[in-house]
Image (cartoon, rainbow, N blue to C red):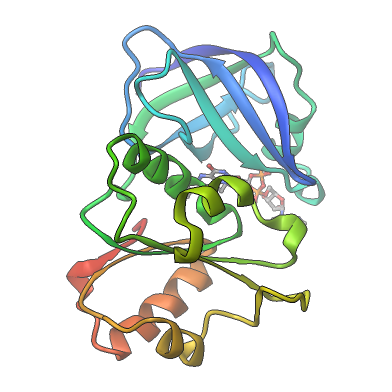
Length: 222
Ligand SMILES: Cc1cc2nc3c(=O)[nH]c(=O)nc-3n(C[C@H](O)[C@H](O)[C@H](O)COP(=O)(O)OP(=O)(O)OC[C@H]3O[C@@H](n4cnc5c(N)ncnc54)[C@H](O)[C@@H]3O)c2cc1C
């Protein structure tokens, strides 16, 4: 597996626990929207601790962007990432993943599972192909919604937010369960892109299949 060193150019706080990392793009490095790589921090002891993160910008850019949720309580790699400064280095590896755009459909994300869809929607926007796609995004509270303004601008009424721990006017409340999907989705013969915690992907996939979606139309990270 080839390793490339990428210097951090800037850090931006996206939500209270999500940070955008803009890093140098190693020469010859290329990816498509939805894919990821194993990242580690280029410091002794941390070099060997690899974690997967998704590219959230487009390959056309001369930099790479990651949008990373920090789990400080895990005392792991995301905590170490949150302590870095511009000029510190990351190690990037091969590009991999199963999530890529296969045609119009409904994107269903839980929490940090939004990241492949950030890149895909930016690519669709560039190609003027956003119309006909929907995004359903589940978070605990309004403050946890990553890039709410960007998705609202892109998708308008085709962007649905659901909250599991806060009741707020204008937002659905509750989990993405069978009742929610039955109410929200008219056509089960479309592509469904699902990303989030393992149990979220499993449950949503199970419900969609029960409503008649074909396994071949579910786009998930295996
Ligand atoms: C293909 C793919 C792409 C991904 N892309 C992104 C992305 O773009 N952005 C993003 O934010 N995330 C992404 N993720 C998720 C991301 O990889 C994890 O959030 C990250 O690996 C967490 O690393 P960590 O070392 O901080 O914590 P972990 O590896 O989860 O945990 C480190 C240690 O903390 C302990 N621990 C685990 N859970 C808890 C807990 N609840 N409380 C206390 N301690 C605990 C365990 O001992 C564990 O060994 C992606 C995942 C995959 C599979």
